[in-house]
Length: 440
Image 1: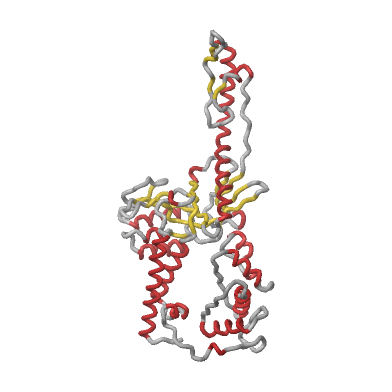
Image 2: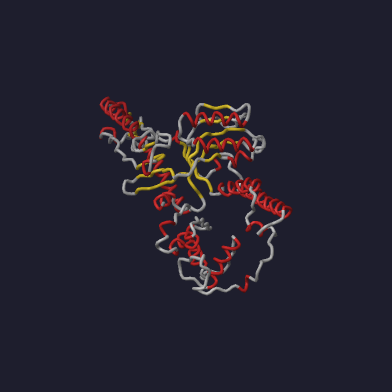
């Protein structure tokens, strides 16, 4: 379809207005989180206990592969039993002496009829207590990291179950580059370098592993776009630099230098802090402090809208589907409603991989001619079968196909409908990043 220059420009402006509206609506419904405390779940690396069962990666993220490309490993620690109080002092001990976090002490006086008994009245008893107390203190010092590691393991256990239940709505992210900035529209305290990661569980060990998913590191531009003083062109340049440099949240000097440059570009008073910055900084301040957190799956929608608006400003052709949405839909050149195709007499360029009825053939023909087709129908009318058939047709033409859905269950059902010989080409990128990498 060709449009005159005036209609083409009108279509561009109408489409841009639609996406600006969607952008504003999304910002109203899903405002960017300005403070890390607003996220559903967080775990700071600096709060992890020093215990052998917790392993942190020390590389910069570019030299590992497969299962070894981990961010963090947390196993279930083994506890040791505390020393038992000897009989001479067993009845005198107060406090929970089996808990390494609790203090233990003795009862100074015990009732004994008319004359109470003092603990220190028997030197041997005091000697036994002092000796046992030293043993208990040594046990508590060595046991506390194990108990702290167990708390981390339990946090990840609960998190794993939550992600399994809500995988379509939440995702786990590694962040660094904590930006602290007091702003009239709301103070900021949030990492700006973000990377999606996967939480895997091996119950036979048992052990949790946080693994990279192959997703690129993001700049939290949704947050910075909501700040009036930040120039969008600066954000665009910083995103380009991040894409070129591939700076990792756990990276070394290269990541540090990128953050130094970034904070100065935000403001002439921008500063880099050694370690995590304090909250409510009058001028923008960035420091290193890796953190894990959950976020809702809404950021990709905002990024897609932003990318569409940028693309609309420069592209020469406009998608037919969008032109139809904004009312620039010319009448068909022929009576398409009269088109009928029976299996066997469809055009030779229609290469369906499964049995098809006349309606499915007609959809494929319309798709070839128009570039977009909307198909509606109640459950059980063959829409999934039709999509699987079209996938085979498009792959036979050497094209790639992206299929989206509100639920991952629908994608799994569709993959099962694709003919078996094409099924290995179908890679899921939503529900389990590890499974997707395995399929790939």
